Image (cartoon, rainbow, N blue to C red; front, side, top):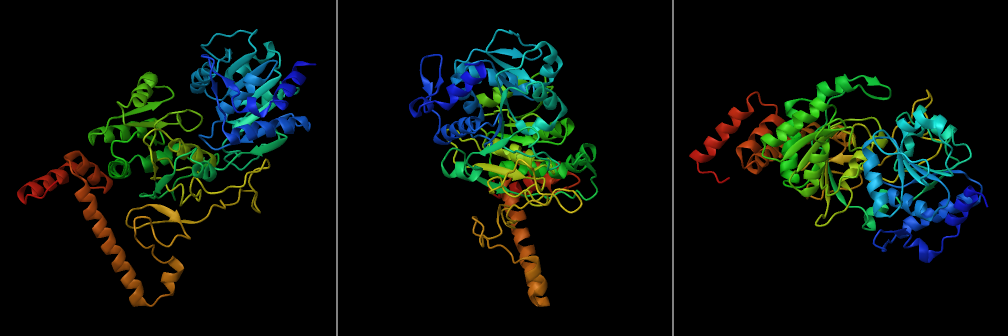
Length: 492
């Protein structure tokens, strides 16, 4: 029996008893797999028995893709390789494999490499540069496999024509809608985000969209918004203040993560949080204090981490209740990856809070994170001019009272406010009714402004509110409000 055949046999003949406790730990215990994880591994083995050599596994963020990989590696025979696309994920994956008692080496800059190891963790960029001196592995597992259309992945998979390949991803499509059928023979989908939430494996969430930035003048570069132009729109005191104010109103004291457009934008948001009395810090892939910041966040001595391009994919940051989206994107994959960071359950957490200050769910048409989606190896259907078709997510609308987003089919927001009629219905009304609608909206907005001011109890919170409203002198306005309260003995 060849090593490849040994691997196929070891996975294909796993008994149900072994499958439910397949990952050993160093203390002799085991990690029980969830029912759907067992089912996915069985379906992978069945596909390989049918002759498929490259299998793509689709499972939402937080569904346990690394645990599935560890189970397969613990059961397989022969040589194996787990490939990640970013250096930040090397240490995280290594820690997971150590907990599962899977001996391994590395092919990554700054890590020890042993060619005798049966299992290696490889960074794709380092692996590309060392391919000529390496023998192909019997099994390759690609993390975040939607990156497989990149040139570096092309070279790696091209070097491993005879290997079994398992791809893991939550979002099997590229920004431009291209599919992954050039690299994978078949696709196996696990339960959806909505199904995992219903089963208790992911957290339920409330989704708010308090800000819709005007991006009409922002150019599109390589399929997404131009970064520099996007920073000019999003890195403004009004939007930053709105992010801080809604965190203070919706998730005060909870651990949260905020996605920014650029390092400068992220630093400005961290500073605004700190000004409002929130323990916050900026971190990115090049931050020298990254480990210290993440450690403080895990320990609970830091409330909010603002970041750019660090925690969007694969990077596991536990304990997140709040997620702030301050980066508009055309990419459904990026949107789902970022929003999914808040959906991991943790002790004491009842619901996640997602605040979309970028119009991703509405203006960009991505819908809600738990919308049912049909994935295909061929990618999204394309329009008559070769561009991807618009999202088929169910339409949503925003409550004018609390800014929570709900499906258009829901007549009343969970806060109790009735949704206004559609634009078409309003246009069909008589003038008096249209005017009444406008007056009602004005009254609701006025009441909301008063409620926001009452909710801002400290000087810092008033400053953040003034920044969100775009006042020229936020601190001056806040001081005036504090004096007003003191003079008229208005309770805080």
